[in-house]
Length: 556
Image 1 (cartoon, rainbow, N blue to C red):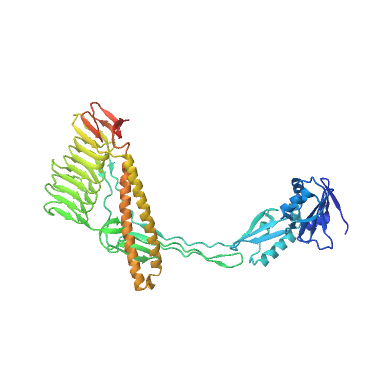
Image 2: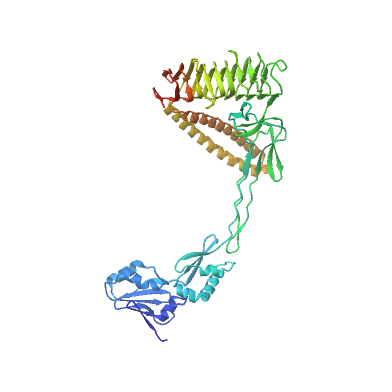
């Protein structure tokens, strides 16, 4: 065959070899074929192997790399041999590499992705596209790929770089179960003005009747199968199931339209105990609490739509709501052992009325009353001459007044106005706290919380396994299931207690300093402040915030 010599930067190249460099052909002659040579070295190919013979020293690797740039099928696999050959220049013929295929197709291990590398120049690829495309199709067929590759995909493949040319159909994994529950009203009092009257209002007790919706679960999906490039099915991951948490004595679960729906088994109020939705006992007095009802004691929540008449008392284990616009006057006591108290119309205690809540008190106004809360006290308009004790005490920042009496709090007192123009003596005492101690308590609590949460998650997974095979459990397995369920429910109750304690501690840490009195409008003379061990008596009008840091009082 005639040889055509091409001059390229002082070197000779063989056009016949160039054709081989751009095809999948290999040299089959009786002697090696020269790829490149000059006075210093010679590079040849034999079969699919590449050899070098170095005649003179001084030829650098960088220079050789430049010379081989136009031969993309050459792959140097024995770098140290090449380096040694260039250094020794002993005229010995040494194997340094191999010829790469013109088009190399590979499949990923999961058979979901096919990649192509073109070991040729872009000009050759464009000129011989049909031939190369046929070679690629043949390789794909040998690998078991079921579908052909579109021409525009192949034409977009860059040369001398690996590129993805085909992908299998991934499975669509199933969605996890979705659970939603009845959303309880936020106990956030507000003063509402409609032009004719002001109302102190809030959504307090969420009443439900038998059959009312309390929650639902959309079940986890199975998912949709995918397919590999070789046509094999790819199973999806089933969505994770989630457990509906409800009190089986007061709530039922029933299947409706492919969903598991929770409905109330009785009339009552919506409560969440230990993370489970339930219907609590609820006594509703449509009128007043008085001679017609006598003193009221009830294990559950109480709603009085009227007022509490003079001399009468209302006691409940949970929440109490007094909704009469006229409020309560001359009453004996209103006591919630474990819940909140809401008195929409305010209270006139006549120096003897007692209001006590295990949690929070929400009241429009208080006159000559004793208010004691395990949590916070929220006052809409005013407290006059009362004894108030709570974790924090808040009067409305615009209209709320604390006038006279004794106000005691653990962390913070906030009001629009303290005292009055007549300079009535008003005493505010903040017990305060040690911030470092509270931070340590919170850290210890969070460790316990995380530990319980991890234990609960472990129990939850065990329950999910049991419930998948609930109808196939042996007596022994059924007993194990019941024990696991009982433990899980106890852990949820413990988590709820820890979370409540966490909120108390984080609430304290929101206090400025280690005890705070915030005056948002004005405080009058004869207001006496004590924060921790520090005291101050106001003798002028003041607006701002007093707070304690260790054993000193600050103002800003």
